[in-house]
Length: 373
Image (cartoon, rainbow, N blue to C red; front, side, top):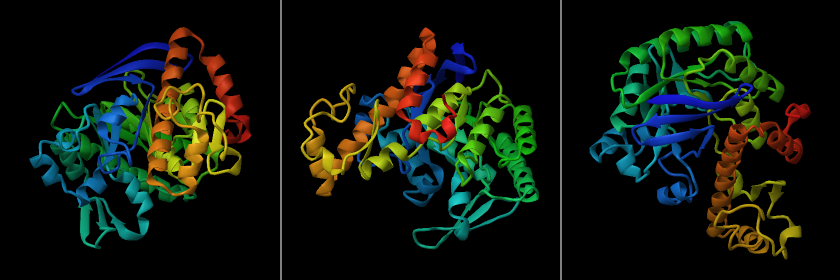
């Protein structure tokens, strides 16, 4: 993997991430295909929407169909039919989200399979090996993501374990075609975050991620952590802000030097009728759209806005027709992909602050305390 910064404005930057399966223009949004596909969107359709990289989840793929099956069928690209770049999360988020079903010690994490209750074990070494066996382009280290609130001593102990895991992951990494990213943890204690960034920089990872944000903390606390850690990460490596994904969050991350983003929100919210537009959010189930002939977003070039009215989408959504979720997801993903592409172009042309001001105005309700203005 090779990364180059091509232009910048303040801490925000435009770059190109070169991998074995193509080039990613950054900043980039990565649609989440937990099991190898975004719900309701096939791989070729996802590529046609403009996605260059997709995220899948190691923990879930380990449960089904199993790493052995994927490897035997030619790796995750061949198995899923996805032609672009693949990044796999390590399962670290499940350490947080499945707290009632897991045990942690220095060796790793032991889960009770949430599907059938059978035991599942992840270690730093097994996580790296599994991602390499699947042939992904970017692999994440195993980490522990503590919830908020958490006492400082508990957060410190968690960070020490995550740092030891990062060292073991780095030593286990053996296939150059799969880049390995370290994850900065430390909860919302600035000294712990600084310690984590220092330790990971010394290990010389291919890229770096900010984890442990959006785990129950006040929005201002999460954003201050992004601001702090973004300034601590190497300028010549890609930076990945994990799991944050409202338009305001993306804008804030880009302003603070982040290059890669993922979030389930565009697809998940689409299934519940919340759609994103250049004028803000709309809730398509509301009665006001029952006879609205306009497209979801008149400035959007997605296939849905080119052929489908708000009224028809309202009808399908209210009728619980599965096609509604497919159409809404298609639009929301295209909005997100265009959103970051427009900001890339604004950065390259020097118009970033003008674009940021328009976004802040449209998404003021999603901007706690007016922090983007």
